[in-house]
Image (cartoon, rainbow, N blue to C red; front, side):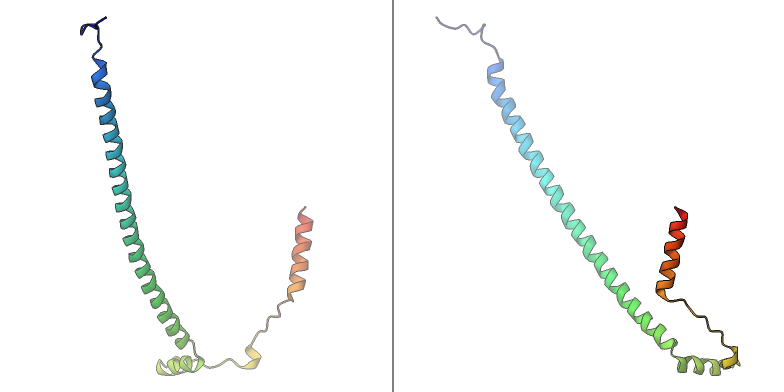
Length: 120
C-alpha cells in the first residue's frame, strides 16, 4: 500500500535539523567557555606576577628600613645624636635603676593552672 503525502508528518525532516542546531550550539558554547576561561587564567596570572613584584619591592624596603633602624639603635650612635642635638641627657646612675625580677617560667605555668582549676 502506498503512503499518501497528506498522512505523513512534517516532523520527520525537522528533527535532524534541530539536532544539528543543538549540537552546533553545544560545541560553540563549549568553545566560547573555554576561551573565556583561558583569558581569565591569563589575566589572573598577570595580576599574580604584578603583585609578586610589589611584594618583592616591599620586602626589599622592609629590609632596608630594618637595617636603618638597627643602625639608629646602636648605643654609640644614640650618644652621638644626643651630643649633636645638645639634649643634655646622661646615663642613669646605678642607684637610679629599678630591677624587676621575673618569676621562672614553671612558677607562672603553675599559677596559671591553679587559676584555671579555680575557675571550673
